[in-house]
Image (cartoon, rainbow over all chains, first blue to last red; front, side, top):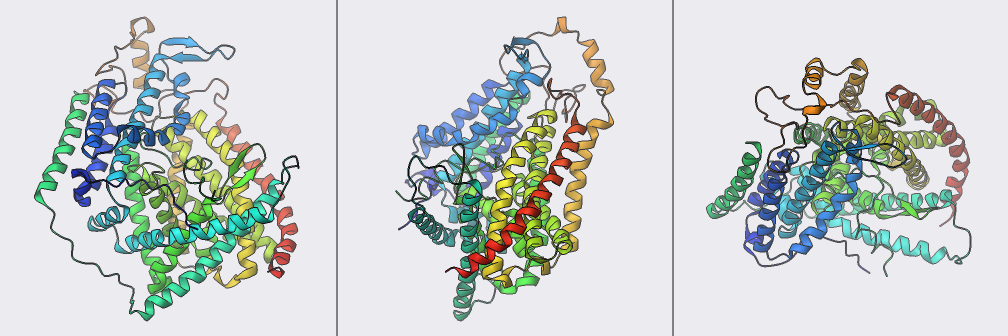
Amino acid sequence: MHIHIADAYHEAASPLHRLDARVKVPVALALILCISLAPTGVFGVYVAYFALIMALAVLARLEPGLVLRRSLVALPFAGAAAALIFTVPGQTLARVPLLSWAISVEGLLRFSSIVFKSLLAAQAAVLLLAVTRFTDTLWALGELRMPRTLVGIVSFMLRYLFVLADEAGRMARAREARSASLEDRQRRSILFEARTTGRMIGALIVRSIERSERVYNAMLARGYDGRSLALDAPPLPVRDVIAGLGVTLAAAAILAVSLL
Amino acid sequence: MHPLDALYAPPPAPPAMHAPDGFFAPWLSILGWVVLAVLIAVALRQTRSQLGERQVPLMGVLAAAIFAGQMLNFTIPGGTSGHLLGGALAAILLGPWAALLVMTAVIAVQGLVFQDGGLLVMGLNIINMGVITAFVGYFVHRPLSRLLKGTSGTLASAFVAAYLSMVVTAAFAAVELAVSGSSPLGFALPAMVGVHAIIGVGEGLLTIFALGFILAARPDVVQGAAAPGRRSAGFALAGLAAALAITLLAPFASPYPDGLERVAEVAASPAEVEIPPVGFTVPDQPRFFGAPGDAPYEVLPDYTVPLLGQSGIGTIAAGMIGVLVVFAVAWGAARLLRRTAHDGHARP
């Protein structure tokens, strides 16, 4: 039994996949920063960013549909901003029947801008994660001065995530096997559900602490002294840096147009 | 089909704080990274002195356990399901700084591998879901569990700690949304706190039962109380709370709009306001680097929600009453649960 958690990486052979992760990570962050800094209501600029992201997606041999579909995870959060439609003062477009809430033009503009910008930023993130293996992202973050110990903890976590997810899966299956119920029976109470799940989590944590002790002993036996050793980083290819600068400049240029 | 297969495909909804990019102001997201970097540096030093070279394997495997624990959903009558966030539980088990690292790893992997939450906003997401839940959980649990002795006291304090960790973090997220101009405070605060006041019950129950099991099976691993760095964590929490309090109290201090803003409102009489053409520029919108004379960036535009109005004080009072009621219920429940926790120990 093995769990496949929906991983965002998408295997392909493309120039973007080959690009050095030390370039890809900061460029993606810069792109997202530019998108976030774009002012409200400049839909032409949003279209320009969308075109830039889609061009990169094509270059990465990704289906544009995949990038669009995955970026929809940002949508549910739009509910948090929906109140702006009614609360930003401005010209009344229409009124909600019964409640007499006024829909303002400015509010609608601000709300739609926030939603569009968050979708664009999500697309940029989809693009980065689809063309960069997580281990490469982590390595790049370490090279970019993220503390080594934190990198160590996160990579350790990823290594054991699948082991413990399998363990959680076995526990969930055991629970299902022991909780037979008929369709028309009353649902189990929330307290019962919480008790079963809570104890499963407790068991998972106890087992994982014990596992970490065994892992630590095994590491000690192999000469671990608290440091993690890594090969020297290869030099940063000049071509990759230029490509990264190009994308960053394009993103900054679009932003500059929007601020004019 | 595998019982967990479906769980990660759409990201689990309830703790709606895996915020995507675009909802928080860029300066706030960057501030979040800066604050987080300082906190992580302190946390790494503190846990190194506590754990030595066991630091990496223990924190890493526990982070994986919290992540896997978050995948275990429990059904709530009415068709939805809830799951653990785990910040308070981790802090009660490990102390505030170790919990901070564990939660940082969990949220970072969710953002970087599974696309759960934005990248620029990740620092803020980690502060909301990891740092605040862990610190609030720890600093509520510790004094309470000393006050209420015994296992039932510990479990009751754990419930309150986990519950409050959700409510406080929801308040933080609401204030951040309001400061970013993405949602009016009068809407975001009651909505976020209200939703998380319900989610918090699930978090509290799961924390009690998980902690009860661990206390019965391996009481020696619960060492949060002995963890070092209490003072420094206290200062960090006090700083974050002060930031929240200042932001929250600011609107009450001045119920009237800023003088300049008022002048602008009078000057631009409604008849002269035109619908801006949809295009590259919109004249009267907040800009980051606006032309001279523009307000640089509106921090809290004057919002009011028709139904709620200026009832901020009422919201806070209601929250406090709610906390007291929850505490009473938790105390009763924990007394009942103590017995079941011991029963559970006897069974294989």
